[in-house]
Length: 436
Image (cartoon, rainbow, N blue to C red):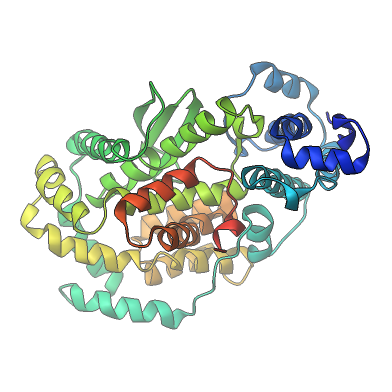
């Protein structure tokens, strides 16, 4: 699949070659593009061993056809990953221009994640934190139970009634369920508004669009299947009741300025404008997912900051759903308190996957500290079983993206959108979000 690729591609002595790569983008691309192409084919080949691995691919169809025909064993794929990583090592990464340096680091770290996942498929067993570091370039902080108890105490004071808090919350939230017959109307209104707000700050690719579908029997609540050419299939799972806040959450997360925009901008800026093939494939279990999920979650707040979200839900979505808009502010307060419990899911996953608790206790943890209803908790456990340490990408990913954007925006809303849009269009890694 990939022979060793070296600096010899540029000709001349080693010092000259290094200088040429550092100062001539075309020369560097001539070296990196073959490595990137081999990386794409490697990801596709790993996908032949795990149907969940390739989340999106819109590169040349003949690359996928060739990979499907080869059906290479994991041992051969591991050797290919090692060979490609070795090809990247001699390149003068520190002397490259900023964008080229980001590209080199991205390719290196993505390949390391591919190598780690091949090992996992081959039987390697990693702890939760070691797995997330290997696959997502990040480790989520650990929170003690006392952290969540403090948050639960604040929520208990805001909820009416007595008894178990999860039961009280479920009873309270029943008044904010979108009737099944109105789900599509409410979601389309939320997505349209999210798109309008995003388009006012980010130039979207011409002809971008999505198809919206409703599905059942999935371990997730919503999913964006990016199709290439700025087109997405957005699916919403209707197995469980859908609360009013999920319209904005999923509309922004899966659509604008979330996954749909992220994938479309990468395709436009890096694949089409620069000819970088590595972004034509998206391996789900890789550092790219932390950027994708973190930006999609923080993108909700970018598009609907502060009181703007409350005003839109109260004035538009509540009437469309047939809900009492007079209670919108009250419910928003509760929603924000519940949102503070988001890291509880990481703790449940960490304990479960490290063998400290079983599936039943993981579900119980989620009902106790994340306040999931029992059926939603069981659905989340199924998600954890399927996607494992991927769960850190939502909460920890959001924290990293939020810190990165806000530390550069300085409180300026326009600058916030500018930095956010730049992040969506660049080959940034999670570890690169943690430093100034």
